[in-house]
Image (cartoon, rainbow, N blue to C red):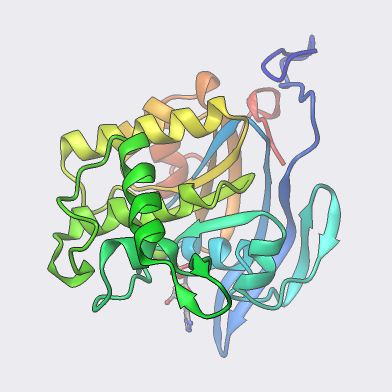
Length: 268
Ligand SMILES: Nc1ncnc2c1ncn2[C@@H]1O[C@H](COP(=O)(O)OP(=O)(O)OP(=O)(O)O)[C@@H](O)[C@H]1O
Ligand SMILES: [Mg+2]
């Protein structure tokens, strides 16, 4: 049974189990209840978008999926096994790469070093293999058809859009099965946005599990398989892209549409 087939009742049938899932996640920061109840299930070979207004809890959700925050309530499941990730390196060990909204690049270092962070090539025990680092970075960028001048350029000298592309390239380079992106196109022009879309489509072809936050509904509808709408700290619906419309998603983001016909939900 293919991942895209549907059962008779119209509910999408999955050939595989979710690679990554959240069950009834709650999270507070002091008095602020950032997440009330979040359910989500992301599948291999799919691009799963999270949409919602500012402050809906999207980044907090992603940070729980990437081990940066720990949930107060609920479960994080990787390949259906509950996990307790205490930090980002544990998420990495579980096969999760992340591109954060606040890009986390080191401004004073160059493109090649930033791309290698976390996996710096060495010669012998201590020597940094500078030539290999530059070759690796150039190769990854070329494979992704990304041009940023020289890999020796300091990150701080790149434009916001170029930095964003480098952060995405760094995550893709890790070649992990799950990739999470928080607003990867926020600083990008039309052409670069399309380029990031191509990269996401390629990750889907490779069978990766992609979760992406975006406010750009045109981008979402061009690349999503599944869309989870968040509102006020809740995941209010998960919809199959092919069964929904922009108007419906906007209605759910703003709260003018409450009820969801369960037959069309590819829910968690
Ligand atoms: N570290 C924190 N301390 C206190 N409150 C926080 C913290 N992180 C997030 N919040 C609050 O939690 C809520 C959700 O924030 P979050 O960043 O997840 O929203 P978002 O959906 O990503 O918004 P945006 O679209 O603006 O990026 C907001 O009210 C925010 O102020
Ligand atoms: Mg955010």
